[in-house]
Length: 241
Image (cartoon, helix red, strand yellow):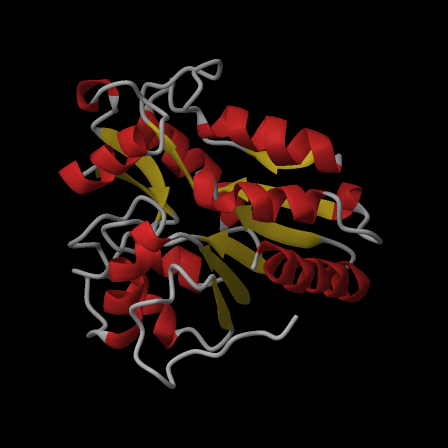
């Protein structure tokens, strides 16, 4: 799954560079994105100096050296490995509303070629937990994290206890994600199966935030057998590669 997703994403980036001289991308984080980003960082024939990266979301109040910092995650796992020199990270240690406004202004300056995303156990897209705001046009917003989202972070090993998980985050808004020319959504593991089913086969609703991806003409969803296990026959196909 990660191999196929990385190959697809690399093709989008190469095409953007060839066509416009620069690829603007949005990168997601979390355990579900690790293998995908590892493979993408090592993709051949990409001039990463011509890639401008934006950050999907970040906790409020987390220091750069914290193990759960998404800034640290992107720097260590993707930016430094690939050699990206143009990037805009969300500093959760500063005033969150100001950071959202400042980075949002940079993001809105031009179109995004591709956004990478996942789906949370509660169906969230970025840190837009249910019921998500489908209406705001602000590029980034400060959001409260629900209990299911915070428990997922403990379950993935980023925090020792529930109380250690921040209560708020800076998140790219739903409408901003949908403004991307293309979206690559990577969702492995059985623990995501219920959310995948709700978002793919249920109603398009703020209660299943990632369901909104079905309204975007150029979204490709990459699942593995475990995350796709709940889908009805005919909803999905297995890539023979």
